[in-house]
Image 1: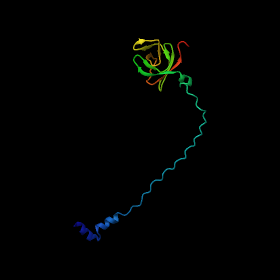
Image 2: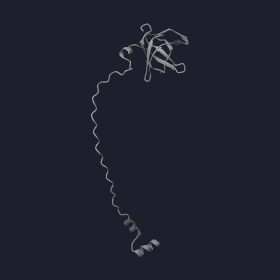
Image 3: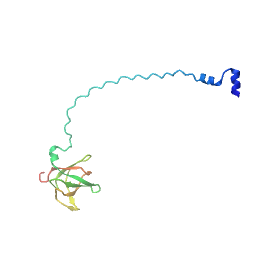
Image 4: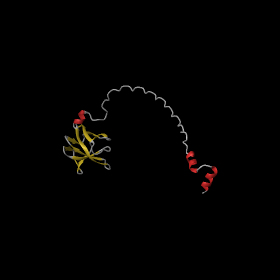
Length: 150
């Protein structure tokens, strides 16, 4: 009721005022985007020579001398169990154990099968070899030089 009385006194209706109040406001201008500085040109990289073979990777001759792989490793006595795939391995032989994170060159000082010392193992045998540091399952074993050839 009060609205009707106010509307008669002022001479307009409240609905019209509401519509008039909702006039479109002018769009607010967005700040201009900053201009990017042109990137400095990079100097052309010098041409490189083809990469030579990395030092420490098995060469073709050593790949032929692959004699086996590590099938287990025990860290307390630091022993690697090696399975021989081809050839022979004897105490005094110099071997290279190479893997993703392993690169060990050592001379075999001790070798055992079922806790019994042995002097030589052949294809198909598995033996524990005293290692100088950690090796991992799947690491390849290469024969560098035989005991008699040194």
